[in-house]
Amino acid sequence: MQPRVLVTRHVYPEAIELLAGRCEVDYEDSASGIAPHDLPARIADRQALVCQLTDHIDDALLDAAPDLKVIANVAVGFDNIDIPAATRRGIVVTNTPGVLTNTTADFAFTLLLAAARRVAEADRFLRAGLWQQWQINLMSGHDIHGQTLGILGLGRIGQAVARRASGFDMRVIYHDTQRAAQEVEQELGLNYASKEELLRAADFVSVHVPLTDDTHHYVGADELALMKSTAILVNTSRGPVVDELALADALHAGLIASAGLDVFENEPEVHPALLQLDNVVLVPHIASASIATRTRMCTMAAENAIAVLTGQRPPNPVNPEVLGKL
Image (cartoon, rainbow, N blue to C red; front, side, top):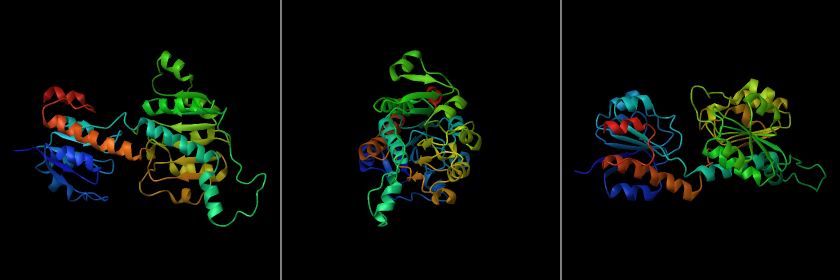
């Protein structure tokens, strides 16, 4: 009898093709996915779960899935899953790191450029028929080249953003809980700074920390008050890392110049105060949304699930301590 897999919402078809060759697949092929109240019944007799960051996998849900062996999350982050609860039950949790690094770094720079040069605002201005003539100060923004970029969180994506900054002749400073190896700093031309030093010195601040209890509202009113009035904040990590109301207040008051946000505290909701502002670029969590990258994320999750179900070590375990118990 083939192992049974539940796929909670639409994925690229290549992932289903992989799973169908090895498993009995229960596939909810819809954008909205399985409603939370229906999920316990659907997962009850499944050995594998392929889920996404919009699926909340908690202790109570895992109680309904006594046969579950693996949770394959189609994302790098896994804050939607209760990892300790899964680990206690001997369930392997996997993610999809690495594959979206460069795509997300590209988009972080896209937001940085768009916010600095007022691209979204200028587009709205033109489409509204407000452009009457060339003017010396029309939609004037901020230069990127030669400026200081501050990176909060120097993981894979943070390092990839630093590499892109070199093409703009930017000075790059960073802060992380652990200082990078000297060879990494030398290779990328980085200078370490405290969080406070970075916020005071940077012309652009790009956020790349994971969402944990310690990083909730990692950038809030106190941090925004330290930044230059000409500074620009970019967030492509997780929404709750930035206090949206504090950011809206700072943008409205001119404490910082602009922002570019891919993620939000209560997705898909966006704080109404942000929606009223012209000096912020808002996009719907699409930093990794290239066709090639999203396809590979889906197939990687499928490969992780298949590996566990066939007694192999998955490529990307989040809780590898469970593997020794299998």
